[in-house]
Image 1 (cartoon, rainbow, N blue to C red):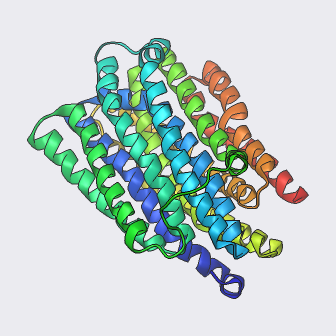
Image 2: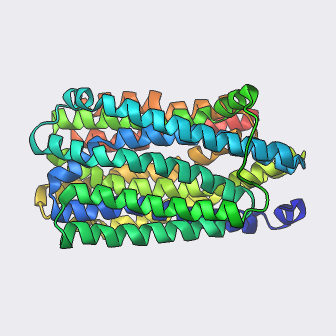
Length: 434
């Protein structure tokens, strides 16, 4: 990285680092959407509902992985910007080892709580069985996915985001081919679709190991001296990402709890289908966050705080524009889109009407997320945590439990935009103080 290039071509550098990250994240999210397509068409709407009931599990893994990975890559990035190569390598190795250990432990704990979670949600019959089959296999994939994502952040951090993009392209294409093979040709149902995700993740893992053995220029695999101080800094620095993703998982659990009791399986299915769009958009935002974070950390570490703020502002404008474009496109295509997953007219109408309300949140959520990434990247974990906690837990949970009680399914759709509007006021205050 070069400060002069960042200063003179800020947007270009953001795009250079973010576009490969965005493509990688979108491709990763498309695995979920493709799975949804095959489940909806070859398993049924109960399968879609079952997968959505388990989304808190996915967010739990993401929360643990991002906490360690984002916190570690920020520390390593600042060390790299200050020219401390040995230190940044030690942080890299410890971050990967910690991410792996935490992910395995998370998988074991989740497996122990399958039945209690399903009891609380009120899942029964076919939905319950599909859940246990799908997530019984997917736990293996989630461990590999988190480790791959952690490696990917360091690949970008050393200036080679294109390679990780290639890894994700291969992963998605493999997943689509295996989904078709297992669901359409072999008729293995929801178990085969979960297995396809695991196998594609393993192929990505092999490609990533090849990079760090043969192509890496800064970060190298090898022995490291464990540092409790680095672990503490890593966890503290990545705490906002943990809070953000964990809060999303809790919010998804709350959404499912409320919808299952007030609307039923049809409501969960409709919410899942709209949620696919939200998931893809959030991956675009995370891609911008992961792309801009190394630039922000590097600039801040090189004693250029003004440049770090400039990167944040430019990135905010980009995500706002993407949010507006996504809103317009999906308003036009909502009818066609809902038909990709289900033929049930009741669910399709829920999707069309709900999308118009829910996606108003896209105008604000990107800015809130990037602002949180910015504070993490400069080592201000408290400010980042406040933003993440507000949008992902405190305000959102209030909206989830209160609004549906008065407005039914419309209240479910309103929860996200109301939350993001309130949170953007908090983000603005934090930026103003900074």
